[in-house]
Amino acid sequence: MLKDCLFAIEKSDEFAEYEFVALVHKKDLFTENQYKKISFVEFPKSRKSYFYRLYYEYFYFKKFANQNNITFWFSLHDTSPTLKNVPQAVYCHNPSPFNTVNFKDIYIQPIQFFFRLFYKYLYKINIKKNKYVIVQQLWLKNKFIEMFDLKKEKIIVSFPEIPKIPSEFLHSEYKMENDKKIFFFPTFPRPFKNIDVICEASKILSQKNEDFTVVITIDGSENKYAKSVVDNYKNIKNINFIGLIKREEVYRYYAKSDCLIFPSKLETWGLPISEFKQFKKTIFVADLPYARETVGNYDYVNFFKTDDVVKLAELMSGFINDNFNFDKTLSIEYEDPFVQNWNELFQTLLK
Image (cartoon, rainbow, N blue to C red; front, side, top):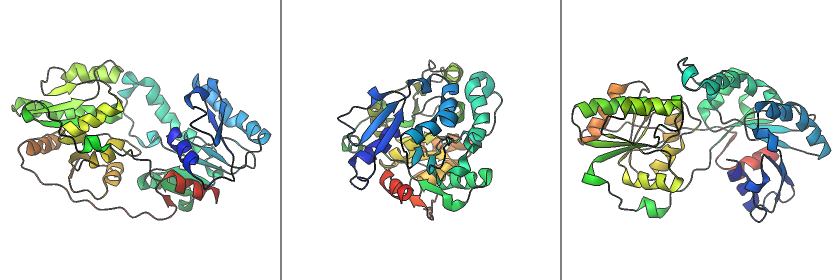
Protein backbone atom coordinates (compact mmCIF):
# COMPACT_ATOMS: atom_id res chain seq x y z
CA MET A 1 0.00 0.00 0.00
CA LEU A 2 2.85 2.42 0.82
CA LYS A 3 4.43 1.99 -2.61
CA ASP A 4 1.05 2.46 -4.31
CA CYS A 5 0.60 5.69 -2.38
CA LEU A 6 4.09 7.00 -3.20
CA PHE A 7 3.79 6.02 -6.86
CA ALA A 8 0.52 7.99 -7.10
CA ILE A 9 2.32 11.07 -5.79
CA GLU A 10 5.25 10.51 -8.11
CA LYS A 11 3.21 10.26 -11.30
CA SER A 12 0.84 13.15 -10.53
CA ASP A 13 1.44 16.75 -11.59
CA GLU A 14 -1.23 18.16 -9.26
CA PHE A 15 0.90 18.38 -6.11
CA ALA A 16 3.97 20.24 -7.41
CA GLU A 17 3.65 22.92 -4.73
CA TYR A 18 4.21 20.36 -1.96
CA GLU A 19 7.35 18.65 -0.70
CA PHE A 20 6.80 15.03 0.34
CA VAL A 21 8.81 13.21 2.99
CA ALA A 22 8.24 9.49 3.53
CA LEU A 23 9.20 7.88 6.85
CA VAL A 24 10.26 4.27 6.21
CA HIS A 25 12.12 1.56 8.05
CA LYS A 26 14.58 0.97 5.18
CA LYS A 27 15.46 3.44 2.42
CA ASP A 28 17.04 0.75 0.24
CA LEU A 29 13.53 -0.45 -0.62
CA PHE A 30 12.94 2.78 -2.51
CA THR A 31 15.30 3.55 -5.37
CA GLU A 32 16.09 7.19 -6.03
CA ASN A 33 15.50 6.94 -9.77
CA GLN A 34 11.99 5.65 -9.08
CA TYR A 35 10.94 8.40 -6.67
CA LYS A 36 12.22 11.85 -7.66
CA LYS A 37 9.55 13.94 -5.92
CA ILE A 38 9.85 12.25 -2.53
CA SER A 39 12.64 12.27 0.06
CA PHE A 40 13.02 9.40 2.52
CA VAL A 41 13.90 9.32 6.20
CA GLU A 42 14.88 5.95 7.63
CA PHE A 43 13.81 4.52 10.99
CA PRO A 44 15.41 1.05 11.07
CA LYS A 45 14.45 0.40 14.70
CA SER A 46 10.74 0.78 13.95
CA ARG A 47 10.47 -2.88 12.93
CA LYS A 48 12.53 -4.23 15.83
CA SER A 49 9.85 -3.97 18.50
CA TYR A 50 6.52 -2.35 19.31
CA PHE A 51 8.35 -0.29 21.97
CA TYR A 52 10.20 1.66 19.28
CA ARG A 53 7.07 2.14 17.23
CA LEU A 54 5.15 3.50 20.24
CA TYR A 55 8.05 5.76 21.15
CA TYR A 56 8.17 7.24 17.65
CA GLU A 57 4.40 7.63 17.40
CA TYR A 58 3.69 9.23 20.76
CA PHE A 59 6.92 11.02 21.61
CA TYR A 60 9.49 11.50 18.85
CA PHE A 61 7.28 12.41 15.87
CA LYS A 62 6.12 15.63 17.57
CA LYS A 63 9.76 16.75 17.68
CA PHE A 64 10.37 15.56 14.11
CA ALA A 65 7.36 17.46 12.76
CA ASN A 66 8.48 20.66 14.50
CA GLN A 67 12.11 20.44 13.38
CA ASN A 68 11.17 19.75 9.74
CA ASN A 69 8.31 22.30 9.48
CA ILE A 70 5.76 19.63 8.58
CA THR A 71 2.46 21.20 7.48
CA PHE A 72 0.42 17.98 7.08
CA TRP A 73 0.95 14.49 8.50
CA PHE A 74 -0.53 11.37 6.88
CA SER A 75 -0.26 8.08 8.77
CA LEU A 76 -0.69 4.97 6.65
CA HIS A 77 -0.59 2.35 9.37
CA ASP A 78 -3.66 2.80 11.63
CA THR A 79 -2.18 4.79 14.53
CA SER A 80 -2.51 8.54 15.06
CA PRO A 81 0.72 10.06 16.40
CA THR A 82 0.89 12.76 19.05
CA LEU A 83 1.65 15.99 17.20
CA LYS A 84 1.38 19.67 18.09
CA ASN A 85 -0.63 22.00 15.86
CA VAL A 86 -0.06 19.89 12.74
CA PRO A 87 -3.13 18.84 10.71
CA GLN A 88 -3.16 15.08 10.32
CA ALA A 89 -5.03 12.13 8.82
CA VAL A 90 -4.83 8.39 9.40
CA TYR A 91 -5.49 5.46 7.06
CA CYS A 92 -7.09 2.59 9.03
CA HIS A 93 -6.85 -0.74 7.23
CA ASN A 94 -6.65 -3.32 10.03
CA PRO A 95 -10.11 -4.74 10.84
CA SER A 96 -8.87 -6.66 13.93
CA PRO A 97 -10.97 -4.72 16.49
CA PHE A 98 -14.13 -5.91 14.77
CA ASN A 99 -13.24 -9.61 14.74
CA THR A 100 -15.11 -12.05 16.98
CA VAL A 101 -12.82 -13.29 19.76
CA ASN A 102 -12.10 -17.01 19.49
CA PHE A 103 -10.14 -18.25 22.49
CA LYS A 104 -8.71 -21.27 20.68
CA ASP A 105 -6.60 -18.76 18.72
CA ILE A 106 -4.54 -18.21 21.90
CA TYR A 107 -2.83 -21.53 21.22
CA ILE A 108 -2.63 -21.23 17.45
CA GLN A 109 -1.46 -17.61 17.21
CA PRO A 110 -1.08 -16.08 20.70
CA ILE A 111 0.66 -12.85 19.66
CA GLN A 112 -1.98 -12.04 17.04
CA PHE A 113 -4.76 -12.92 19.51
CA PHE A 114 -3.66 -10.46 22.19
CA PHE A 115 -2.66 -7.85 19.62
CA ARG A 116 -6.19 -8.00 18.22
CA LEU A 117 -7.67 -7.36 21.68
CA PHE A 118 -5.32 -4.41 22.15
CA TYR A 119 -5.71 -2.91 18.69
CA LYS A 120 -8.96 -1.03 19.24
CA TYR A 121 -7.31 0.92 22.06
CA LEU A 122 -4.37 1.69 19.78
CA TYR A 123 -6.83 2.99 17.18
CA LYS A 124 -8.52 5.16 19.79
CA ILE A 125 -5.41 7.11 20.84
CA ASN A 126 -5.54 10.57 19.22
CA ILE A 127 -8.08 9.44 16.62
CA LYS A 128 -10.25 12.53 17.15
CA LYS A 129 -7.26 14.78 16.45
CA ASN A 130 -7.35 13.78 12.78
CA LYS A 131 -8.79 16.02 10.12
CA TYR A 132 -9.84 12.80 8.37
CA VAL A 133 -9.90 9.08 9.09
CA ILE A 134 -9.64 6.95 5.95
CA VAL A 135 -11.19 3.48 5.59
CA GLN A 136 -11.72 1.24 2.58
CA GLN A 137 -15.40 0.37 2.93
CA LEU A 138 -18.72 1.75 4.14
CA TRP A 139 -19.20 -0.98 6.75
CA LEU A 140 -15.88 0.05 8.35
CA LYS A 141 -16.96 3.69 8.33
CA ASN A 142 -20.11 2.76 10.21
CA LYS A 143 -18.08 0.72 12.70
CA PHE A 144 -15.72 3.64 13.34
CA ILE A 145 -18.65 5.99 13.90
CA GLU A 146 -20.12 3.53 16.40
CA MET A 147 -16.90 2.55 18.22
CA PHE A 148 -15.11 5.91 18.35
CA ASP A 149 -18.01 8.39 18.15
CA LEU A 150 -16.61 10.07 15.05
CA LYS A 151 -18.58 12.40 12.82
CA LYS A 152 -19.39 10.78 9.49
CA GLU A 153 -18.08 13.76 7.50
CA LYS A 154 -14.62 13.14 9.02
CA ILE A 155 -14.41 9.58 7.65
CA ILE A 156 -13.41 9.12 4.01
CA VAL A 157 -14.26 5.89 2.23
CA SER A 158 -11.33 5.32 -0.11
CA PHE A 159 -11.18 2.31 -2.41
CA PRO A 160 -7.84 0.45 -2.60
CA GLU A 161 -5.92 0.17 -5.83
CA ILE A 162 -7.12 -2.97 -7.64
CA PRO A 163 -4.42 -4.59 -9.77
CA LYS A 164 -5.45 -5.08 -13.37
CA ILE A 165 -4.94 -8.71 -14.38
CA PRO A 166 -2.61 -8.88 -17.41
CA SER A 167 -4.46 -9.84 -20.59
CA GLU A 168 -2.20 -12.84 -21.10
CA PHE A 169 -3.97 -14.44 -18.13
CA LEU A 170 -7.46 -13.09 -18.73
CA HIS A 171 -7.57 -14.52 -22.25
CA SER A 172 -5.48 -17.63 -21.70
CA GLU A 173 -6.56 -21.22 -22.29
CA TYR A 174 -5.03 -22.86 -19.23
CA LYS A 175 -6.48 -26.27 -18.49
CA MET A 176 -6.12 -28.59 -15.54
CA GLU A 177 -6.01 -32.36 -15.77
CA ASN A 178 -9.21 -34.25 -16.72
CA ASP A 179 -11.20 -30.99 -16.94
CA LYS A 180 -12.26 -31.33 -13.30
CA LYS A 181 -13.96 -28.33 -11.74
CA ILE A 182 -11.24 -26.39 -9.93
CA PHE A 183 -11.94 -24.36 -6.78
CA PHE A 184 -9.22 -21.92 -5.69
CA PHE A 185 -8.47 -20.03 -2.48
CA PRO A 186 -5.32 -17.87 -2.46
CA THR A 187 -4.56 -16.98 1.15
CA PHE A 188 -2.03 -16.62 3.91
CA PRO A 189 -2.94 -18.87 6.85
CA ARG A 190 -4.61 -16.93 9.66
CA PRO A 191 -7.52 -18.35 11.73
CA PHE A 192 -9.93 -15.68 10.48
CA LYS A 193 -9.24 -16.79 6.89
CA ASN A 194 -11.53 -19.73 7.75
CA ILE A 195 -9.77 -22.31 5.55
CA ASP A 196 -11.36 -25.12 7.57
CA VAL A 197 -14.83 -24.51 6.14
CA ILE A 198 -13.58 -25.24 2.61
CA CYS A 199 -11.82 -28.38 3.82
CA GLU A 200 -14.88 -29.65 5.68
CA ALA A 201 -17.11 -29.05 2.65
CA SER A 202 -14.56 -30.83 0.47
CA LYS A 203 -14.55 -33.75 2.91
CA ILE A 204 -18.32 -34.11 2.55
CA LEU A 205 -18.12 -34.09 -1.25
CA SER A 206 -15.14 -36.46 -1.29
CA GLN A 207 -17.15 -39.00 0.70
CA LYS A 208 -19.83 -38.72 -2.01
CA ASN A 209 -17.19 -39.38 -4.69
CA GLU A 210 -17.67 -36.01 -6.38
CA ASP A 211 -14.99 -35.28 -8.99
CA PHE A 212 -13.29 -31.93 -8.29
CA THR A 213 -10.10 -30.29 -7.04
CA VAL A 214 -9.62 -27.61 -4.39
CA VAL A 215 -6.36 -25.63 -4.51
CA ILE A 216 -5.28 -23.75 -1.35
CA THR A 217 -2.05 -21.78 -1.05
CA ILE A 218 -0.70 -23.25 2.19
CA ASP A 219 1.43 -26.34 2.84
CA GLY A 220 1.60 -26.50 6.65
CA SER A 221 5.05 -24.99 7.06
CA GLU A 222 3.88 -21.37 7.48
CA ASN A 223 2.61 -21.41 11.09
CA LYS A 224 0.67 -23.47 13.66
CA TYR A 225 -2.67 -22.76 12.06
CA ALA A 226 -1.48 -23.92 8.64
CA LYS A 227 0.00 -27.07 10.17
CA SER A 228 -3.26 -27.90 11.96
CA VAL A 229 -5.27 -27.48 8.74
CA VAL A 230 -2.91 -29.58 6.61
CA ASP A 231 -2.60 -32.28 9.31
CA ASN A 232 -6.39 -32.54 9.58
CA TYR A 233 -7.15 -32.68 5.86
CA LYS A 234 -4.04 -33.92 4.05
CA ASN A 235 -5.66 -37.32 3.39
CA ILE A 236 -8.52 -35.85 1.37
CA LYS A 237 -7.44 -36.51 -2.20
CA ASN A 238 -9.49 -33.64 -3.64
CA ILE A 239 -7.54 -30.98 -1.72
CA ASN A 240 -4.24 -29.75 -3.09
CA PHE A 241 -2.17 -27.73 -0.59
CA ILE A 242 0.38 -25.99 -2.82
CA GLY A 243 2.05 -23.53 -0.40
CA LEU A 244 2.57 -19.81 -0.84
CA ILE A 245 3.02 -18.72 -4.45
CA LYS A 246 4.13 -15.56 -6.25
CA ARG A 247 1.68 -13.04 -7.68
CA GLU A 248 2.12 -14.22 -11.28
CA GLU A 249 1.39 -17.79 -10.23
CA VAL A 250 -1.78 -16.60 -8.47
CA TYR A 251 -2.91 -15.07 -11.76
CA ARG A 252 -2.14 -18.35 -13.52
CA TYR A 253 -4.32 -20.26 -11.04
CA TYR A 254 -7.10 -17.71 -11.50
CA ALA A 255 -6.97 -18.56 -15.21
CA LYS A 256 -6.93 -22.32 -14.55
CA SER A 257 -9.69 -22.30 -11.95
CA ASP A 258 -13.43 -22.40 -12.44
CA CYS A 259 -14.50 -20.92 -9.11
CA LEU A 260 -13.00 -18.78 -6.34
CA ILE A 261 -14.01 -19.62 -2.78
CA PHE A 262 -13.45 -16.77 -0.34
CA PRO A 263 -14.66 -17.72 3.18
CA SER A 264 -12.71 -15.19 5.26
CA LYS A 265 -14.49 -13.92 8.37
CA LEU A 266 -12.76 -10.55 8.36
CA GLU A 267 -11.28 -8.30 5.67
CA THR A 268 -11.02 -4.61 4.91
CA TRP A 269 -11.59 -5.48 1.26
CA GLY A 270 -10.78 -9.01 0.05
CA LEU A 271 -8.53 -8.34 -2.92
CA PRO A 272 -8.82 -11.80 -4.58
CA ILE A 273 -12.55 -11.14 -5.00
CA SER A 274 -11.88 -8.02 -7.08
CA GLU A 275 -9.12 -9.75 -9.01
CA PHE A 276 -11.18 -12.83 -9.83
CA LYS A 277 -14.17 -10.73 -10.91
CA GLN A 278 -12.07 -9.62 -13.88
CA PHE A 279 -12.30 -13.18 -15.22
CA LYS A 280 -16.13 -13.11 -15.01
CA LYS A 281 -16.12 -16.50 -13.31
CA THR A 282 -18.09 -17.93 -10.38
CA ILE A 283 -17.33 -16.79 -6.83
CA PHE A 284 -18.54 -18.36 -3.58
CA VAL A 285 -18.00 -15.82 -0.82
CA ALA A 286 -18.74 -15.28 2.87
CA ASP A 287 -22.07 -13.58 3.50
CA LEU A 288 -20.59 -10.62 5.35
CA PRO A 289 -20.71 -6.84 4.81
CA TYR A 290 -17.11 -6.56 3.53
CA ALA A 291 -17.73 -9.27 0.92
CA ARG A 292 -21.05 -7.90 -0.32
CA GLU A 293 -19.43 -4.47 -0.66
CA THR A 294 -16.41 -5.84 -2.56
CA VAL A 295 -18.56 -8.01 -4.82
CA GLY A 296 -20.87 -5.09 -5.59
CA ASN A 297 -23.10 -5.66 -8.61
CA TYR A 298 -21.86 -8.97 -10.05
CA ASP A 299 -23.75 -11.68 -11.91
CA TYR A 300 -21.78 -14.79 -10.95
CA VAL A 301 -21.75 -15.03 -7.15
CA ASN A 302 -23.23 -17.02 -4.30
CA PHE A 303 -23.02 -16.13 -0.60
CA PHE A 304 -22.81 -18.53 2.34
CA LYS A 305 -22.64 -18.16 6.11
CA THR A 306 -19.04 -18.50 7.22
CA ASP A 307 -19.63 -21.58 9.39
CA ASP A 308 -22.24 -23.26 7.18
CA VAL A 309 -20.25 -26.22 5.86
CA VAL A 310 -23.36 -27.91 4.48
CA LYS A 311 -24.39 -24.85 2.46
CA LEU A 312 -20.91 -24.50 0.96
CA ALA A 313 -20.85 -28.21 0.11
CA GLU A 314 -24.24 -27.83 -1.60
CA LEU A 315 -22.98 -24.85 -3.63
CA MET A 316 -19.85 -26.73 -4.66
CA SER A 317 -21.84 -29.83 -5.62
CA GLY A 318 -24.32 -27.76 -7.62
CA PHE A 319 -21.46 -26.07 -9.46
CA ILE A 320 -19.73 -29.39 -10.19
CA ASN A 321 -22.96 -30.77 -11.63
CA ASP A 322 -24.14 -27.56 -13.35
CA ASN A 323 -27.22 -27.36 -11.15
CA PHE A 324 -27.44 -24.08 -9.23
CA ASN A 325 -28.53 -20.44 -9.50
CA PHE A 326 -26.61 -17.26 -8.72
CA ASP A 327 -27.62 -14.79 -6.00
CA LYS A 328 -28.83 -11.30 -6.85
CA THR A 329 -26.57 -8.38 -5.96
CA LEU A 330 -26.91 -4.62 -5.73
CA SER A 331 -24.49 -1.74 -6.09
CA ILE A 332 -23.80 0.29 -2.95
CA GLU A 333 -24.33 4.05 -2.93
CA TYR A 334 -21.61 6.11 -1.23
CA GLU A 335 -22.02 9.61 0.13
CA ASP A 336 -19.20 12.14 0.41
CA PRO A 337 -16.47 12.11 1.50
CA PHE A 338 -15.76 9.26 -0.93
CA VAL A 339 -12.79 8.75 -3.27
CA GLN A 340 -11.79 5.99 -5.67
CA ASN A 341 -8.02 6.38 -5.93
CA TRP A 342 -4.93 7.92 -4.30
CA ASN A 343 -5.04 11.03 -6.46
CA GLU A 344 -8.59 11.86 -5.37
CA LEU A 345 -7.66 11.09 -1.76
CA PHE A 346 -4.77 13.57 -1.71
CA GLN A 347 -6.94 16.20 -3.38
CA THR A 348 -9.41 15.81 -0.50
CA LEU A 349 -6.80 15.73 2.26
CA LEU A 350 -4.87 18.79 1.09
CA LYS A 351 -7.66 21.15 0.12
